[in-house]
Amino acid sequence: MTVAVVRFPGSLDHDSARRAVDRLGGRAEYAWHADGELPPGTDAVLLPGGFSYGDHLRCGAIASRAPVMAAVRRHAEAGGRVIGICNGFQVLCEAGLLPGALRRNATLSFVCRQMELEVADADTPWTGGLPSGERLSIPIKNNEGAWYGDPSEARVVLRYGPDNPLGSTDRVAGIASRAGNVMGLMPHPEEACDPLLGSTDGCLVLRGLVAA
Amino acid sequence: MTQMVVVTVMPKAGVLDPQGQAVRGALEQLGFAGVADVRIGKRIELEIDGDDPAGQARAMCEGLLANALIEDYTVEADG
Picture 1 (spheres, helix red, strand yellow):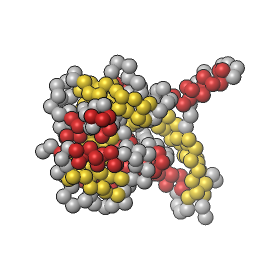
Picture 2 (cartoon, chains in turn green, yellow):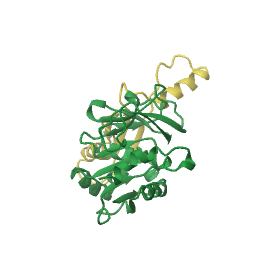
Picture 3 (cartoon, each protein chain N blue to C red):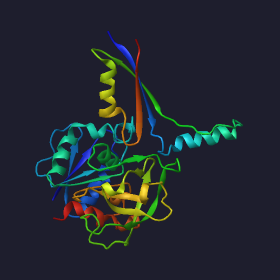
Picture 4 (cartoon, rainbow over the protein chains, first blue to last red):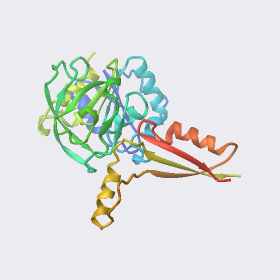
């Protein structure tokens, strides 16, 4: 399975994402923000974390209007799988491929720590067949990670614990489109795919990219 | 001839503005009592060529400058 990892000016986590895709047996190919098409043979798309276009105006706003996003939209509309992680989630919301918006954390601080997440919807490709209520340990690192929106417009896939550290509506950590093929989350599954990093739970999420 | 258009983008009423809250707290600490609320937005100055600069600016707000889900905007054109 070929996974297009889209790079924007200011993307940071594309190398970690590529390593995670490799570890899962997929083949990662970089796509560039100015490209009009995804790499030939793309099966799935990953929008990595970072600070695309310096987070200017609003996080993800400028990237969501980049030429490559027209190709990502076509891929998603044809039923192809797309995952956006952190800044990639912000880009998907700004592009209208997922509902809602990501706002400044309620703490007004950058939050960087391992999080325990709760599976809220078992019936998507992104939770490795785990039942609802199952826990995943995946880190977060962001400043604008509070999801704001109407949860009934999406499928809530992952939730934070009761402390809801960023102040998300309905404790949302990750949501998917109604069809389930487009997923966005603030936690970083690509940083939880190696036992050296303390958790491999991220593999369960990213397997959605390489599993048929 | 270009015309200056000023776009103001503000967080929507009811949407928590943590920046405003933090500044309100700091003002209170400095002794400025009686500040009931602080909201922080952005001012965008556009130099626009062509007809209907205000209309163009509104289209830019809809297309990029504001996120209608969480922000309101106003457009002011000189002259």
